[in-house]
Image 1 (cartoon, rainbow, N blue to C red):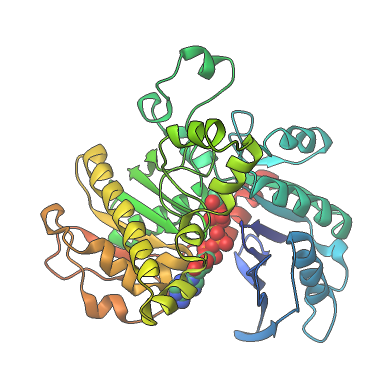
Image 2: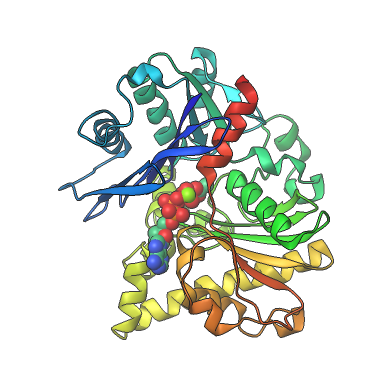
Length: 399
Ligand SMILES: Nc1ncnc2c1ncn2[C@@H]1O[C@H](COP(=O)(O)OP(=O)(O)O)[C@@H](O)[C@H]1O
Ligand SMILES: CC(=O)OP(=O)(O)O
Ligand SMILES: [Mg+2]
């Protein structure tokens, strides 16, 4: 069975084509810096154990639709085309960030589901409209395929009420489902399962730190998510590329009452103009580390804020779990930025976390351990693979 997976992130589209049930990747790719300067598309085709790479640098990629059209051309045209006929794809698996109360497990997408998805746009304005667009484009291209949604929120359904309820009147929960949902669940699930396997432990207390353009952490006890840093929408918790993370709601009142913002402007400010972008002028961590090397003090401060917030959550989740076996770094920043990992792990000896700085700055593929031999808590880099996890869940549903 051919399963094509589309993962629409806020600034990127990742995709992979798998042959199931063998989990064999046929091709994969990454469309990066959507809506920013210098967008790139990296397309990899796997033939007879060899990897062939095509790199494209389009003039501009204003949105996800433009990105997906380029991907379609790569899949179907040229000598590295992997599909003769788009009808050969039986399933398209879509990453959908927000499932709300309505979607708690992997779901086949029909007209009714699509209509209900529109109701979630306000909850994840950077993501769910992009996923919806991905579904519409995929329906046109892969006319024979069953479209399936895999939700970021699903893995966090195990949160206990003490972790997911807000201290506002009960009716806001019972009537309007206002609660913490949590995101990046597909990634947190994948990397914590990989880590538990690596550690050879059935029972484990893990903190998963997903640092991409969006960033979140999860406390995972024996495979179950028990707390997580994103909330009702993917805005709270850690400092992100363009999102503020935790912020006192009083700021919103001030913006509206004193500065005359309307609510659209507030949303735009906190979702699209804040985080690292607001602090430094750049949302991409590579641009920020380059600025730090140039001696940019604002960039240095922002980098410190980013690490400090994560450190506070590590302390908090160690308390939640009443112990800790390993912390896991994953996603674009978590897997690649050695300096931020070092800053986060500095002065955490009391919690039993000791980084091996040489291992931390050595690059390699796959899972790796970057803590010292005597560190009580293991520090791991586990490359995420949301696409594989999505393909497996889709296969599980249709087979
Ligand atoms: N070599 C690198 N060093 C530092 N940061 C990196 C590197 N490669 C990628 N990144 C960061 O990863 C981010 C994208 O991560 P990713 O997990 O792909 O995010 P998303 O899925 O939210 O689009 C980029 O914004 C960039 O800051
Ligand atoms: C939920 C979320 O923030 O996703 P991403 O990191 O892909 O933007
Ligand atoms: Mg992502």
